[in-house]
Figure 1 (cartoon, rainbow, N blue to C red):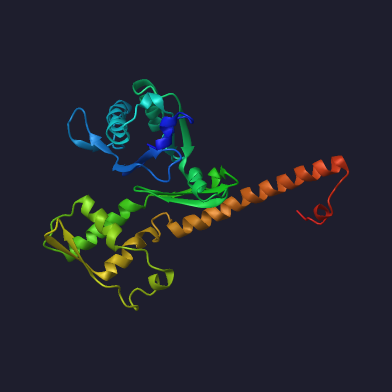
Figure 2 (cartoon, rainbow, N blue to C red):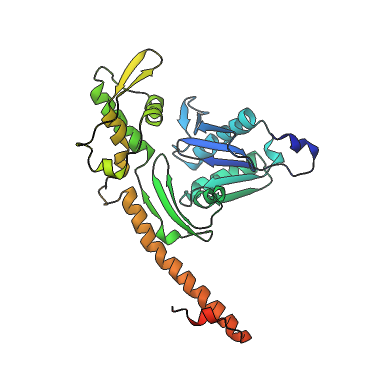
Length: 299
């Protein structure tokens, strides 16, 4: 924790927790980055097997998993008492109500935190940029969610989502590598994820439309566990992310999501601007001091 915290001049920093389907980021408010990023999984108290926190069958099971998981976050990684600090939960606007309520119960009843603030992930991501309006695309592990934000307000009626994200990319990469490296029976998820991050990339639109005609990027040799060698062709490295831009059965892709969100958000933005214009126009008329530039505005 920061050195100046012990001086007693400021209130203790709040704990920020962002629980994702694959990874959880957590740390202290006011710092430039999270203290740690860990997998969202914990050893189940009943079966004693490692299980993903979001793979629960009932709210009672979710409660037990969250108790164990948050205990590890506080007492193994942050090394602070939950009672001493406020909590900020960064969540998706589409987060299930059952998960949100169960998480609040765990923090209030079991860990006795003083307060909890739930903030939308699409909105707070703009704080690092210093802007109030943006088109925010969150490509997570299970799904990609796009929500426009206008003047600090998420435009919910323009939200878009598709069930293709990092998990779909890893599944495509795994199938391609098993087809090429026929001697391998399977790849661990951690290995596939490491290969994806280290060797694969999103190509440009120009190259994507001419993948068969352009020169392929160089092949890569990946060492698994320091001994086994995995051959990764350049074509696989360049095309594995194309699954995000291919239309699914609902004719949805990342490209169509962006276009549809822009079209739907335009109506909200225009209606907001027109309402603001009429309010200001009425205010100026009441004071009989109407600026000349307002007279020339056409709505």
